[in-house]
Structures are given as C-alpha cells and as structure tokens.
Length: 216
Image (cartoon, rainbow, N blue to C red):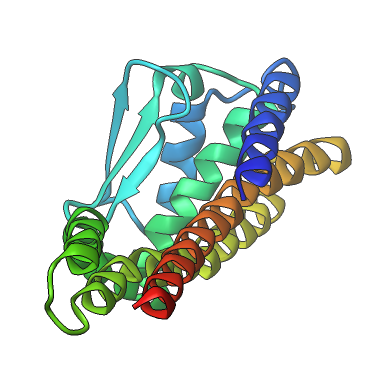
C-alpha cells in the first residue's frame, strides 16, 4: 500500500507536469473553462472561486462552491482543462443527487471521529480488561475504509463526466483527450492507494488483535 501510494503521487506529479506544458487548442484558461462548463451544464448558481497554490482544486457540495487553485485557474493547459472538468463533474453529481456522493458526504463526520478515536479505543482495549473494547475501536476505524471505497465510484464517475463534457463541447481533440485521460487516471490512482492503505491498516490491527488474544 505504501509503495502504491508513492507511485500514485509520482504519476500525478509526472502527468500534471507533462500536460501543464501542453496548451489546449481552445486557448481558455481554467477559470474560463469552468465558467463555460458550468453554464452549459445549467449550474450557473455554483460559486466559482480561486485560491493561491496548486492542485488544491475541489468542489464543496455543502455551499455549492467550486474552488480552483491559481495554478489551474490561470493556466490554458490540457492538464488544467482536465482538472476543471473533473471538478465540474462533481458539481453535476451534486445537482443530480448522485447517490455515492451523498453517501460520502454523510460519512465525513463519522470518519473524522473514527479516524482518531478508533485507534485510541483499540489500544485501550489492548491494556484494559474490558471485553471487545479493541474490536469496537477497530469498527470505528473501519469507517475510513468504507469512506475510501465509496470515494472510488465518485471519482471515477466525475472523470467519466469530465471527458464526456469536453468531447461534447469540442474542447479537446485526440492528443488533448489522451492528456486529459492520463491526468485524471493518475489522480484516480491516488484514491485507489488510499483505499489500499486503509485496508492494510485494518488488517494490521486485526493481526495485532488476533495475536494478543492467542497470547491470552
């Protein structure tokens, strides 16, 4: 899982670096592309914002806000086009009440609590004579794996929508489409790596718990 995570980060940096140097034929910077895609998708009410930095782009369904990093918003590259379309894809998911997106949003508070409370309860159960306390901690932490698994279809679907939108709008050609797909595929790999890390951590906890019970 660690090797996969390192590889995924390498692929993201490599793909983004390569295609951020390739201009898109439309000549639109990320901010302009976002405005156009939101308009044709009937999402004029989505607020479009820009923030300093790079690759911090995201859509927040709670306040219907699409935030672009300056490195993407001001770039007329193929990479910027793919990232913008992906985030607009999330806005479309929200507008159409895409079930996995709603489910992921509902899991956020559970994961926030379980990710830090779960390990504490698990370790406490290893030293305190309270039956099944470690198992309870493990269940708390397992929410992170559920969240990671639910995230996969959300991200894959947003990327599929992104490519389709750019194709329909005539914003990408053959070479550009290849670049967009490579950038989005590299980004998707990071979510696969996150799921693998969550699973490996849970398996490690199970290994510790089973070994501890055998010693008992």
